[in-house]
Image (cartoon, rainbow, N blue to C red; front, side, top):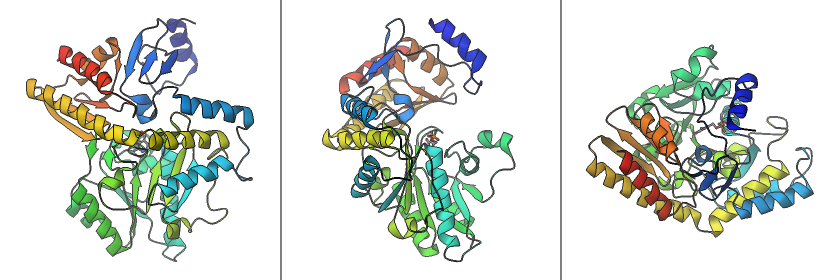
Length: 395
Ligand code: PLP
């Protein structure tokens, strides 16, 4: 099929939630690169929106998946699953969590975390401790509860009445957070670095104060690591930058390297609040998805990709800072590891985004002034240099 035929078919049959997409349909990928139907090569600095942690078609992932496809795809959670047990063990052994539950997406992982926080206090007899405080401009997903958790009116306005029990406060304003707490507060849910709203990290000091406050007030700290997890920020999990541990954290995106899987990870006493029948899923944690997760975490650890994310993140930011010193329309470069944002003083982000696409570079655009970059964790200095040259020419 030609690209135009595919576009026409999409317009006729697919619900129009994505509007006019970038006019391309990728045919194949390898590492940092994608190729379109005209065999034009692209450098992928968006990584499927922080999903392709190992890049495209990494042999360790594809070989594991091919073998699993021939062996078993799905059985349901009525039976034990070897790769599920192994992936849960790998996540527990490499994090502060004691127990894991698998689902299929980031929103579902956050739903699971919200349910776990609520049931935890219900089972202690605290019926009215259900409220969850999140941040303004946060993004936690598209289901009804996670839309209510998301601190952005644009995602909420058409779906009212919203799921009750959510409050939003300004990022890094500890006093505002403290003031929002009531006896009903059961959890505070934070993204370590807000991704979708333009790469806004929470401060280390803020994270530490929030942890202390949670301990004092018997409130659970949930970190939404759907985007920041799996090495993205230069540590396997972003909470490791803060010197604190969350009670619950959620994963998705990079966890499956492109195969849909999410996870709710929790401390033992909190995880124990979920008893048989309290939560569950048909697909979540199936043999295929967990094989993907295992291949991803093993490759990240064996091949030093978390360190690469830290090193390449620093290199990338230093190169963007260099551009900033030469172009006055760059306002700020920010982020952690390979979660990088660049904000302009003027509304030029969309234009640069489109021109980068024409030059064969895929990046993200937030609003009119921010570009965001989420390359695979295998990115090299050479790849970054190529993007910087393209940006330099456009600026
Ligand atoms: N949480 C965060 C921090 C995210 O960035 C996203 C997606 O962008 C989600 C949750 C929702 O994940 P999903 O689209 O897999 O439901």
